[in-house]
Each structure stands twice: as structure tokens, then as C-alpha cells.
Amino acid sequence: MQDASAKPAALKFTGYQKFVVGILAFLQFSIILDFMVIAPLGAIVMPALQITPQQFALVVSAYAFSAGVSAMLAAGFADRFDRKKLLLFFYTGFILGTALCAVAATFHLLLAARIVTGIFGGVIGSIVMAITTDLFALEIRGRVMGIVQTAFAASQILGLPIALYLANAWNWHAPFVLIIVVGSAVGVVIMMGLKPVDMHLGLKQEHSPLMHLVHTITDPRYLLAFATVTLLATGGFMIMPFSSAFTVNNLGISLDHLPTVYLATGLCTIFVGPLIGRASDRFGKFRVFAFGTAVSVIMALIYTHLGETPLPVVIAVNAVMFVGIFSRIIPATALMSAIPDVTKRGAFNAVSSSLQQVSGGIASVIAGFIVVQNADGHISHFDRVGYVVIGAALITVTLMYRIHRSIVERTAKPAV
Image 1 (tube, rainbow, N blue to C red):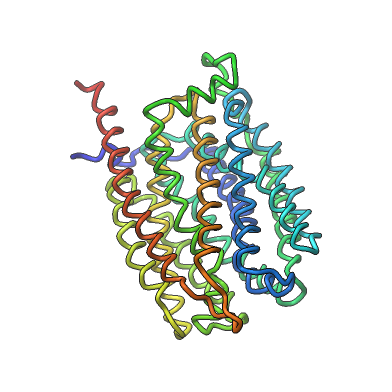
Image 2 (cartoon, rainbow, N blue to C red):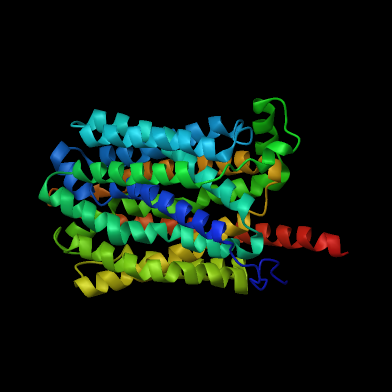
């Protein structure tokens, strides 16, 4: 079956579109850094606050759970406002939540701070997706996603090594101060440079926000996408919270060399991300997703079974694993952006974000109960986490194929 998303990317970015892509990538950098930094800080935070792996998993998942609830509540209103104003509102709250993390001194205060940060930060990704869908055609959306998602790698190259350095030099609060400074600069750029994104307001809107939400979550065309999103979050949320502790205590990599692992992995993925986006537009988004799933399954199996390993091998394994992860995330987000109607893009993305965050939070908690940290710091049963991740990935690829096929069929209808 021909892949409808495999079209020549003849459309080119306008000057303003290039500017928007830069803004969205910069925005994602600060959001992803805030979310990701807590995981590599685990090796420092757990002994500093004297908390267990289960409590740390709860800190990580608290952001996800609060983000999920917030995104679901915001879904009914997501298409009723200028997306720029909505973005600025939630981004301001995100900065304030991060400030609370910067002053948290106990487990319970940190937990509360992550909840506040999640309430605001968890909605931002859905707004970014809606803006992307509004301003960019499907034929070039893979390239946009490739650039925007490369913020993930940029946060590793620039953010995580600096954050870990600051945490090692001072304390684990310092990285959050860094995020506040960077995030405030992003907010100023958005306020000054982004034009209103309100084209959807000229179309007929439902009078009731509640019914808008209900009609979105009950639309048969959207249910399959929501089920797919639920499983897509499993891998990262189960492996990432314990990756730093696993790398230090099981693989034998010192805390001093941990930034090197993230730096080298980030350099690889920041180069590969845009290429994956272009490949998604050129060869088909589902084909690239299937390739990424195969790589992810293999690397998850290898990574979770490693023992003491030389630093170059750890870097290589991490780099290939993230290539697989990006080869799933980029085409999946681009492909699913073609599903919602114009007047439901905000609600669809908000619900998707909610499901992703909640399912990811559940996955993190489950991982916390699966793994056990021994008295010497060694992480046990990490291989079982890998098996769960692999199972979820295999189910997801079958669901994504059905989404791809439905888009192909709908795209072909006008030609009949």
C-alpha cells in the first residue's frame, strides 16, 4: 500500500515559518530540559533527600500525572483562544513551577513543585503541536518535527551536561535556576516575535467546552490514535527515570563521566533528528516509524542487560538507542497530526498529551516497583523493564499501521 505521507517535500519554508520553527524548538528545549533533568539527577537527589527508588519514581511521575489531568481539563477550551495567548499563559506558570523546584529542600516540597510544574508544562506540548499543524502542511511536517524534536538532543548537548556540572559543583537545585533563566528568555522571544495563531477562531465552534471535549474523546477516528499515544510513552518513562542510577551503579560509569554520556548521545541525535524528519517526508512516516521500532526493540534488549561496560560502548549503545527512539517519535507525531479536524486540533492534542503524560506516569511508577536498588546501589530487575518496553513497542507498531492505513484511505477519497 502506498504511503500517503511519502510525498516530495516540494513546499519550502517561508522566512516567518523558519522563525516559528526556531521559536518552537527553543521552547521545547526548555520544557524538555526541565522534564529530563530530574532523571539524571536521580543519582544525586536520592541520597541527598534520603529517598527510595519508589519515592523518586513518584517525583518523576508526579509531573506526568498532574500534566495529564491539566491537559484533559484544558482540552475543552484549547480551540477557543488564540494559541499564542494560551501558550504564554501556561509557559508563565511553567516558569513559576520550576522556581518552586529550585527552592525545594525536602521530598514533599519537591513532589509538590513537580506537580505545579506539570500542571502548566504538560499542556505546552499540545499547544506546540496545534501551532505546528496550523502553520505547516503535512508534506513538510516531518521536517518540522525533526527540527523541533531535536530540542531533545540539544537539551542533552547543552542542558544536561551543564546541569550535571552545576549539580556536582554546587547542588541539585542549580539546574532549575538555569532553566528559569533560559525559560524566561524563551518567553520574551515568544511574546515579541510570534504572531497570533487564531485562524481556527473564524470557523464554527461548539458552544459548550464540555461538549467539545466529549465529542473529541468519543470520535471513533480519534480513539485509535489515543490508544497508540498511550503506549508510545511507555519506553521513555520506564527506562529514563533510572538511566543515570543504572549507568553509574550497574555499568560502572562515574558521576564525573555521566555528562560525557549525555553529551555524546546528544551530539549524535541532534545530527540525526532533522535527517529522520526529512526521511519521514520522503520515504513515508510509517516506514520510518517501523524502522525506529525495530531499532528500539533491539537496543532496549541490549541496554537493559548490560553489566560493567567501557565508556565508549555505553556511549555507542545510548546513541543507537536514541536514534531508534527519535525514529519513532518524529514520524509518529507528524503522522498523527493529520488526524484531527481544524476546529479540534487543540482539543485532540490536549487529550493526546494528557493520555501520554498519565500513561507515562503509570509506567514510571510500575518501573519503580519492578526495579530494586540494593544496598551497594546496584539496580536489579532492569531487564524486566526492558521486556515490558519491548512488548509495548510491538503492540504500538501494529496500531500505528492502522492509523497510517486510515490516513491513506481518507487522502485517496477525493481522487475517486
